[in-house]
Length: 208
Image 1 (tube, one colour):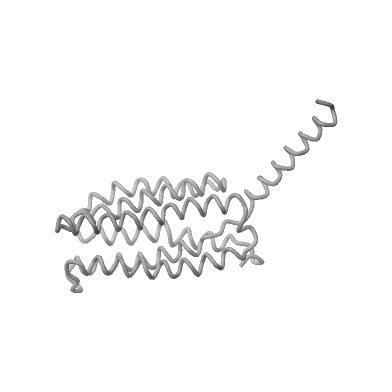
Image 2: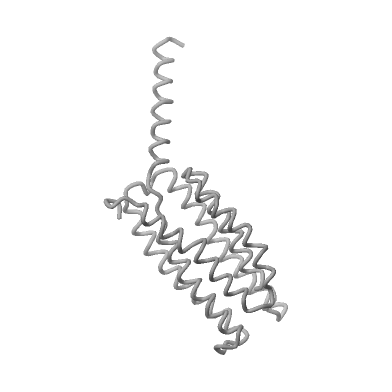
């Protein structure tokens, strides 16, 4: 290999490295999706808490309907947010594509787990399986934040990942108590709504 060829390879590597670094500095998108998740599912968790505490009357499969409606509302909001984010600068950067794939995995896993729980509840005629739902969600959120933190290099997101993983077994101690659903709502605010608002605020004015 001649000196010119070696230099050409070095130039190509330097160019690819610059592209990667530029993509890493792209503003993180998807904050509005997290805000929607925190609001919709947080509200559903509060309604579930109120029903479990006897404040409102929801019986049996009414809880399945409650969460099913919440998922439908969130899915509609998700489609709107995705369409808007696709038009923004930086949407096709490596950090946003990888982060988006990670959170999409979290969302699909949540949906599939919910359907699986419905099947188990239907076949066993017991709803106890849904008591693991908050712990599973926090565990999945931890994975989503870990991917986002790794790709973006933003260390504060690692705190969210670790916090979500810690919250998963802790909330299990509230199993059987209406407070579990109140704690779940608080966790959604802490690990979805608030950080989602932070991400939205971090977007440059020209991106918003």
